Length: 431
Image 1 (cartoon, rainbow, N blue to C red):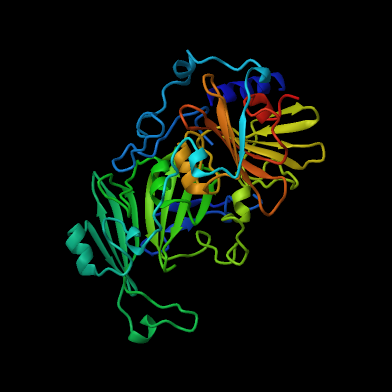
Image 2 (image 1 turned 30 degrees about the vertical axis):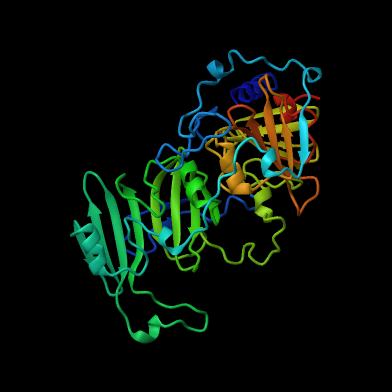
């Protein structure tokens, strides 16, 4: 992946939603405050350059081996050392890719990760779930450092040198309000919200702790129900809705790690019922799966819609706008033709990024519609091609290191790649 980044960086030298949500200290249950107009990242809508692999299994329970590669919780070695003794590809005449349409499991170099469907018990923090009683909270957490009581809510604060945890409970009310109304809504007494901002000993659901790499969340919870981004701070919010749709678990991701966790009742913009639930699902995909960093192909381009661009180069009439963590290619008619990730501080709408293990990609997206396998014995890559069933000719491509089985590149494209093994051609920087 560093090779791709270096080539793109050299080209730059030559060519030279809104969802700012934050955990606040409010005593009300709505304690993730929206500071801007919320916009999901996937709508027709970055800081370490290069690759820093953040594996999902630095914690016990997710160790995976594939074809003799090291345990998945070992970080990828330095690219320079890793590639030192591997022959480099000099030209297309020196190799031949194997292209497989609709590959089977036996065609894949790794075994796809199986992610168990979420159940209600996965939506907890510190073992507490929505609706739990005050007595249970005190039994599990002990006496709070601060106790606040209002007409409708009771707030318990557990703040010290090692943790910052806040539990908000809905006070008891009349029986009629606790019964579902015509819309199915009701007041649930007991635990309403939990906010964890500090404390690595406290686990959420499937044993996710603060400081865990984001891929741990992906491997244990799967693709999020929604993914939001604070464009000012580059914090991502992975939103998971419970099977009963009465609770959501939100992971705030900064610098590729879990920074905060919240358990709350579902509400906009985190859960948007009208977004795409009424659309037909084709091949397991929905339209937002085929946008990247908020940009959809064949749409008009707006330069500073989400971030201020840092560089712009021109190649054969097309312009490449670079935003640090990602880039966008447009043609002479200002139409978006290609979007690509440049660091692992940017994500697809299913939460994938550079440095992920191939098994994680297969767990999030399933088997690709086309598999292009690089040759053995030389430094090469494989391509996982996912075709957009809603828009012919558009596809999402994961470029996978052929030996190490980690993601090197992620691109959203509308034209075929003539030579997958040539990084310049993957980015459209060489004829």
